[in-house]
Length: 238
Ligand code: SF4
Image (tube, rainbow, N blue to C red; front, side):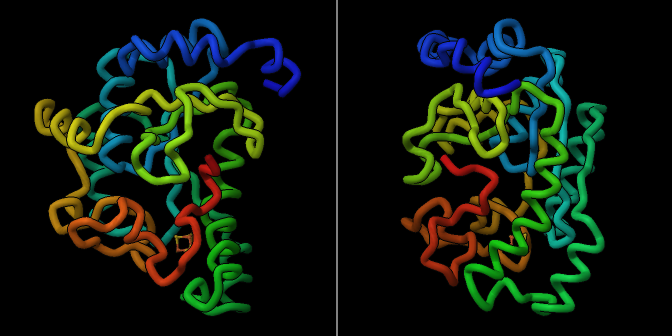
């Protein structure tokens, strides 16, 4: 769907409607009134697990996609396995292009991302952004598990947004949920979750770039902890 079509759809109307809707209600609104081809990108974080639960239990017509960067924690793969078994769901896995990774490693080293922000972003571009571009291609709606209180960058988000970078309507059904609500929902519904969350990890990405956080630290403090950047990899630029 192009920007010209989106300009004809006033997303503020959808944002107003979404305020009173449930998680599946927000997704249904998107499917019924914006586009029927929707994709949900999951990294098997707790928020993503809640959305997977709604999509599976409510039988919503949404494709599931995940990015395997090649540097994930084993615990993340275990969560993937458990989720696959619980919901009997099909998740399309997107890997980075082998040639891109080989060239990067030859030039910058296997852990070159520690050496500069530019090299870190180049690695994220190869292992995440480019596969994501392939994953979103052909879809009109991109569903995410983002929440407004995850970071300062995300505090101004809406339920429905136009993502300029990927030219797609981004839908954030968990926008106003707190982390406690998410974890309570997971407990109440016996949803599998990444066991690293029991060891102080909050936001979990690639193994070499994620660490546990201390009480009182920012939600994203464990991501690229050696940097003072905005703690985003470019997937979500809100
Ligand atoms: S999070 Fe780290 S290992 Fe993963 S893609 Fe980004 S720089 Fe590379």
